[in-house]
Length: 396
Image (tube, rainbow, N blue to C red; front, side):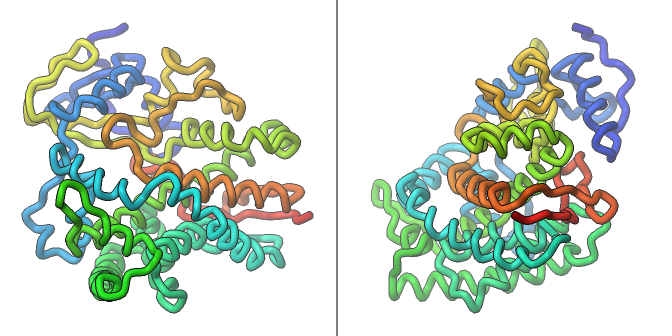
């Protein structure tokens, strides 16, 4: 292990160069201080595990004096990803009362119907805007229907979902910050109105379940419920991005997809490998609230800390042949969905969406190919994925 930091360079924006940058930094030292900035970076798997687990030293809380009066204030309340204990535990316990594994399992028929609906829309086409016409509307529609949003309002949620993803695509003209802020204000107004309706007339939807949830005499207020719906929609982009990353992985590994078509039981394992190999959340941020030792380095208090999940998930100390896409990889203890108290609460819902959509796509096509000239890959420094994929399809 080299303990003296090599010359620090900024990560490049192309995928191959970015992955090489992550490999180089991890090989120099899994934990490093960025020269001249005071910022710390974690690149190794065991070091990332330690950092993600130590929520008492590395805070996940985000505060902003401007946020309460901002159009984006919707994301402040109920946002589990921005909270530390004890409030994080209290809020997660309340959400878990409504968002149970049994509840998610009961959504399977609705997920299957939604996938079938959008699959039928693209079936007449041989060239498909895969994200806009298939992946994104499936995820946003499932969430809207789960929340209880009427059909006539679901297009608003689809547009909001599309523009959230476009925010991290510098070439997109549909998702600028002003558009997202305006749509978020509209969504916030509508959600509060809708929550009020559900308080008066409860249904079987998730909002009604969140209203009814109670732990130790505590319940969720309207701002927290609206914020949780916003969190579901924004984090739901991970499922959209994974659906895109899957077709990219399959396009680039034809032997693997041929095996998957022959052995559909490997689909669950293949999804885990997709999110390890093309980790949609490139990194997560923390701030040290006291001195903490990680990987033999003492990180002082008050420092920003970046945990590079994309590097940890390619660490050869944890994964054999980490740069090989192996759809039967087992075990596959990747960190793409987090670790510890901030493990993704919506992971089971996302997996149900992804498995259903990919399973149907594989079963109903002979082959598909990505047209990279017509596609728009995201900047991997923010997220591995694509805001649009032009997909040529040969149907069965």
